[in-house]
Length: 276
Image (cartoon, rainbow, N blue to C red):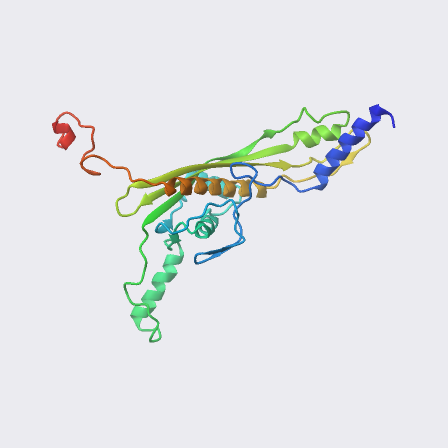
């Protein structure tokens, strides 16, 4: 075969592989890594991501709080993505770093059962007496700093002699997300830890169009699912970073004690530092 014909056919075959394969690359957690999956029962994890950081012993109880009025949460809804809490709860329990206590909507059901017990409608031996609920030592709050799609990747790299290749390359999009997890001590209100994570993946799509070289192509939607997966991967990366920092945790201290005025005095103030 003429050498001038081999290159276009090879490029066409490469484009065919892209179009016949999956619609996106595997989501990455700080790289090309997997996302949260599997199950957790007590301190046992099944089918979990091997890249998820683990703790040999739990660090305390934690409740999760999501800011549903934050702009990033509305953006999730706009992209038909739900609450981040279910996947975060699974990830945290699989890690064995914290025991999760319910402080969300299921709390209403918990209190309803106690109301039924107090009304006398419960059977004897139901054991819903006071003093059984477990306190939350910490509160963990998730947030998304950035989540979006960047422009076409490599549009000028695969044009070659077939217009099809240029269309494929021009419709490769990168999903990116940056997330943060905050850990607050509920008794003191002190922030224990903060961690940021990132993730990214690629979408492959094909716009419906007629292409040169006698090739005509059908459509191909640009799915929202890869974007959701990359957000989850970014949160997993955030959690991994937090666990790594907590392994060598050392409490912050202020001379004179926390909340007694600090070391930075002001003129005429009443704190110890102000009187120096």
